[in-house]
Each structure stands twice: as structure tokens, then as C-alpha cells.
Image: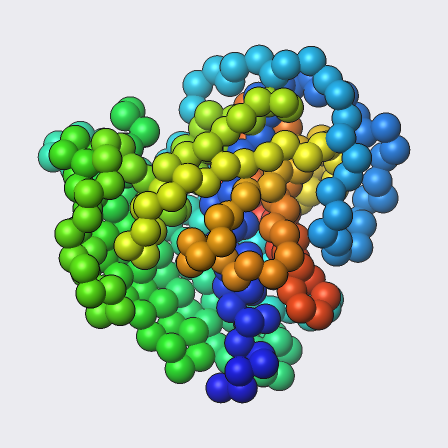
Length: 291
């Protein structure tokens, strides 16, 4: 594959993951509108809206997510369809106790895949305990162009250890500390906790054999039009996950911005990420609430 194309295409896949995962936001249902309302369908951009002061957010009542929730995102580059990402929260059990299976399916589509002759067919499932907030691991099956990668991570949150089965990672056993999170569950935990303006939110992540802290920053608010049942001019919070260099989570050029609804549900609805030429965008195309 042409080496100059791969960073762009790799960023598309990274943004698809971030769309599904980076779901943090304020729990306040009465946050003020932006000082200058944006157009209904703003062009792709990576510059955040100006911050808007508002009172501290109230704690969310109950979990903002549950089984049955399903989100579909349309991914574009230079206004061309690049693919779709589907996120689903499914019920499961572990040792007789209820858990969530957090599923992400990513596929390339449209002119983008045809133009670059680059197919993406990725499937990721994380197992997360909503009662303790701890991860039990993650399974990834990634098919991107000619690249193939399969990974199984099993986390013991009590012992603070992790086992990694991946042909590209030599070390198999890791000490990760109590309740370390896989990368997918980490964003759901951030979504559950919420992020108030001026407050700090950091989660501990174990991914691809590396343990690191993933902080989130509040940037401001924006009203955008969303598909049913969410409706027009929904107030959203703009958040930036500050990914550490060398984490292997995303490529390091530019910034990654995520829009989530500014209410107790904290639904991820938009993502923007800069690439060497232009930006990759992901927008919520359909939403099914939890059962």
C-alpha cells in the first residue's frame, strides 16, 4: 500500500473508534446556549467553539447508558463517504453477574474505499462491569487493507493484572493495577462520570501493552441538528481527549474533538480530527436509546 496514504486512512479508523468511545459531557440539563449560535450544519472543522461560562454541572442521576443502545456514525473525508461505525451496548454475564458487551463494528464504504482501494472491516468487543466500573478485557479483530491483527486482552481487576494474546506483542503478562480499563471501556467510563467545565477527568487505560492516563478537556458548547429522536438545535458539549504521544491509540498529527449531548445521557454525536490534508468527520446518522 502507498505509504503516503496510510496515515490518512489510519486516522479514519482512529476517528471511527473515537466516535464510538469518546462519550463524555456535562450532566447539566440547563447549560446555557453558545454566545453565537452556529449554523445548523457547520462545515467540518477542528477549531473548538469559544468557551461559554456556566454554573457547575449537577451530578447525573443514574447511568447515561444501558443495553440496547445503538449508534451509527457516517464518516467522511473531504465530504466523501469513507465508511460507517456502529456502536452497540449488549447484555452479558460473567461469573453469573451482569456485564455489558461494548461492541464496535467499522466498515469502509463509498467512493473513499474505491478511490484508495483500501478496505476496513474491524470488529471490537469490550467486556465491562457497570456495577464496579472495571473492565474485564477486550477482543479486537482488525482488517485494514492488507493489515490483519487479532488481539485478546483479559484483565483481572482485583489482582491488577492483564494477559495479552497478540502476535505483535511479545510480552504476555502485565501488572496494570486495580481496575485498569481497556481503551473502549475507558471512554464509556468517562461518559458515565461526565465532565463539568473547569473540572478534571482522567481515566487509567491499558492498551496494546501500555499503561497510561487519558485526560479529557472541556472546550465549550455548540448547538447542532441531530437525527430523530434527538431533534434539531441540540445543545452539545465539545470535549478533547488528550492522547499522550506514543500511546498507539491515535496518530499524533492534529487534534481530536468530540461533541456529546449536554445532558445526563451524554450521547456522542460528532467527531472531528485533522489529518495532513483536510479533516476527517464523523456524524451521528441514527440513534436507538437503551431498552
